Image 1 (cartoon, rainbow, N blue to C red):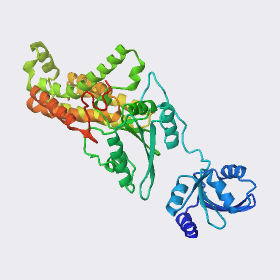
Image 2: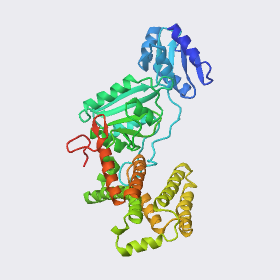
Image 3: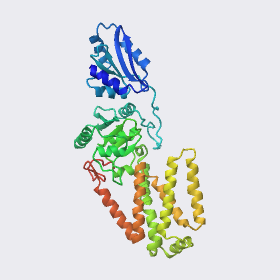
Image 4: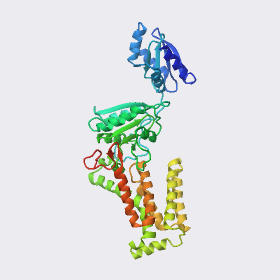
Length: 440
């Protein structure tokens, strides 16, 4: 154990917030190691002194200390416990190294209302960066002994704790075993982003559809568990990752069930309509304006032609130009501070759009079509799903510019075939009746 003590000191002695303190506790000498930046040392010592009283020898003292934590056998364990904010202590003879749960400093925000997912009727708490708080929220939502929590320490240099949650009688045993095997076999892989987790699980990152559903709502994550899915909670990440993601996640929300059935059905139908409008509207504009105007009534075709009078660009270039401007506005509104984000959106959406029409760079009809597209894109549940919709519409734009209405149908066939081919751990993205994930 003396070698463990030396390696511990060598690993952290260059850090100014690392401490090694020798202190008498009930007339017996103890040596404490830890990081001041992660713990309240004085409060932790007071708690230990209240428990450790009338100890006659080191062995009895070590036995009581182990009741407050756990005994350490390897230096890697001691390093990990210190980095997690725990207090590592040993007796003066260095025979026992014990990790004790220290009183942490206040480094995390409290449980707050969700910032990115608006809730009309339902629980308003959301995940935070602290893993233990997130697990507590999940335990509050699912009060059952069948909820299983498995923790894994991933990473070689920068270790990060990953927790896998599933309901024993609901989740597929094959799915859980496959995920657990990947996590155990790749413990030394770095884990900082969602792409790292996908690589760790053997999932390709080159896909147009997210394999995880991201949610910051404990209620949504708990309901996903009851449907046989698994949930990942990663330390320092304020949201949960639900695996596998399925097509219904785009327009089905558990909070819809808090409304009457007709209202819930109406909301879901609106989201489905919004998906079709967001994907098809730009391509349909190009097809009806430049390739198949004969499909329209003569009065409507003449009205559209009159609105494009003086526009120097073909319909494809006109649409791509305005789509690029819209994408820039969306990214700017996301990245900029909230105080000036609405101003940029108003300037880009209203003033710039009106100026483009007055300058005869684009038609009035295109502004209406793209405004409807942008609004419809926002009806999709989940920001990652809305990004996928934003990508899919470009497929229809290019196919419609070449083949017109036929290109629209070809694009629908390609997208449906692609979605039908997606499988995550042998679970299809579009589940058939009776398969896991059927939530209708």
